[in-house]
Length: 174
Image (cartoon, rainbow, N blue to C red; front, side, top):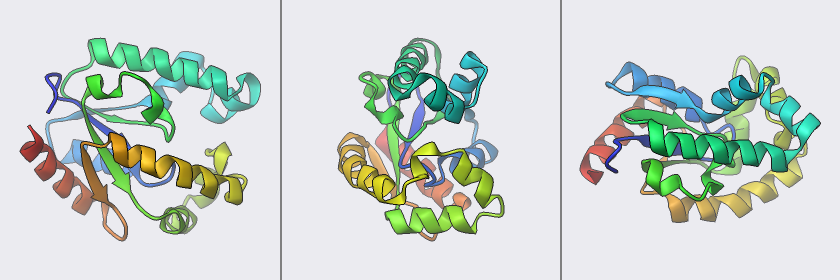
């Protein structure tokens, strides 16, 4: 574990970072921060609207600002990230990086089977074009794997099962 004792969850949009984060908070002493929630609060608008009104480049610059704040100011925290947050240059300085990994088709199935599927899909503008989303997944997955300190396959596992595995692996990683 890095000296700030943070856990950073990375992975493709819809893989379950938020669900797993909530479960970790319930089953440990960690508090949680979601980078997309921080950005929405700072900008006073939804991620989808930031993309539409200001563009992806602007959104990524706000992510960079958030990452610098996290590195300097946040300790003993579980940080759930947006799908592209892994690109910030200082990620390794923020905490232990845990990749939640699953095949693209399983991620899509997970979203589609969620009781709130329509809202989940509308919240993720990059999933509007499934062919482009799959290409993005193919591009990002090797990058995620290269960055991760710990990889957890979340396919067909409950958030609680993932939580137990993460907490066990993080403890060993110290």
